[in-house]
Amino acid sequence: MSAAKKKTEYPNEKLVLDYCHDIASGKLPANREQIEGVKRYLKDLKNPDYDFRPAEPEKIIKIIETTICHQQGEDINGHSMRGEPFVLMPWHKYIVYNLLGFWHKGEKVLRFHEAFIFIPRKNSKTSFSAALAWALSLYFRRSGSKCYIVANAMQQSRESFDFIRFNVHLLGADKDFKIMDSNIERSIER
Image (cartoon, rainbow, N blue to C red; front, side, top):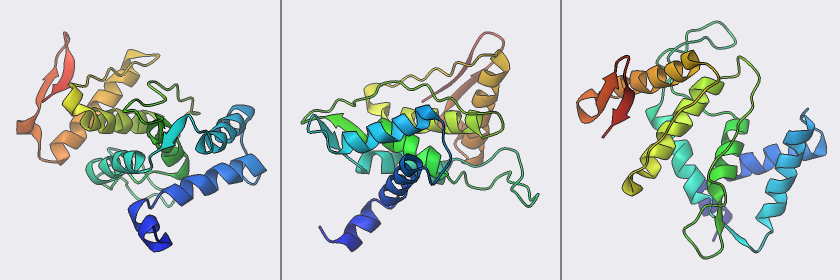
């Protein structure tokens, strides 16, 4: 496969690889767990027990970046981000690539089935978690996927639900989804 075709086909693969090398080399500051995580990722790329399938994380990234917008916040210059596309940062893409890139050799079974994502405050963790939950639910829809968003506080779970509901409305897909929002149940179903 030519390099030009691969670049077009998997536009985020090199970005994620560069991110991993920058963390591993110390070019980007990181804690011990981040360093261990990217080293494992780089090691897994060479592991014969896994097939690396960049097409799968690319689908998730595309779902997020084409169907999810910011509900609130401002950019570094103080401009409103509300309604602007949710463009993932390199660390977001690394997480998606790590979760969806590795499959057991010759099978349709992902290496990872759950993730604990620890991110400091004010780094878009609620929005990213909700966007990732949305994308994974769409990706696994043929299997009858269910996604539960759990947080340390009920308010955080509620914010994730409201963020997804905001984006369903923004997409004009309210009539396509059954949205329950009461004191008994908060769910989005199709």
